Image (cartoon, rainbow, N blue to C red; front, side, top):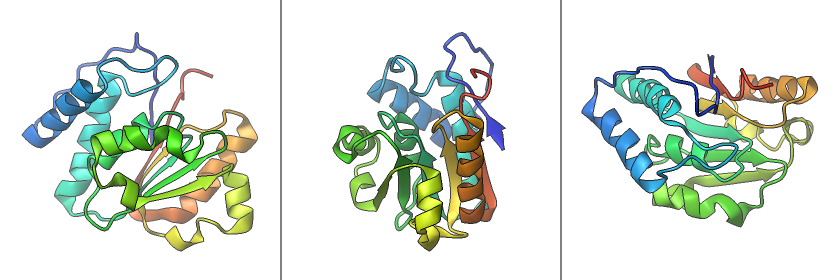
Length: 178
């Protein structure tokens, strides 16, 4: 589990050893030069995510990518750069409407719209209704950035735990902000 934070004042030095990962961070920075107010992917997070997602590719891990709390789609867009053909991009959001964030996804990954599975609602409803059960043991990357109440975060974690592959990575966002 990786805990991250959107604070623009969070500084760290991360060395990306793989050219592929350096290129993905550069490309994302060119596509989205300024993190959006209240969110987005700051450079340090992009470097850490790139290291983890790239390591999954190098190790041959396969599986779908999931984001809970998509807002404007920057987290999903960054992760989608590491999506292999045939892998799904699963997005769950209580507030965002589908068309709002699709242009952001497509900007980073031209095939993202075809790979997208979108669920409107919270993780509690998705679990109760079994809406994500088809992805059980298929998710290799999950980014949790949904509601920030204890109950909501626990529900997100319960949902994600059922969906993760054995070697999957769970990223919990805004860990230091609330």
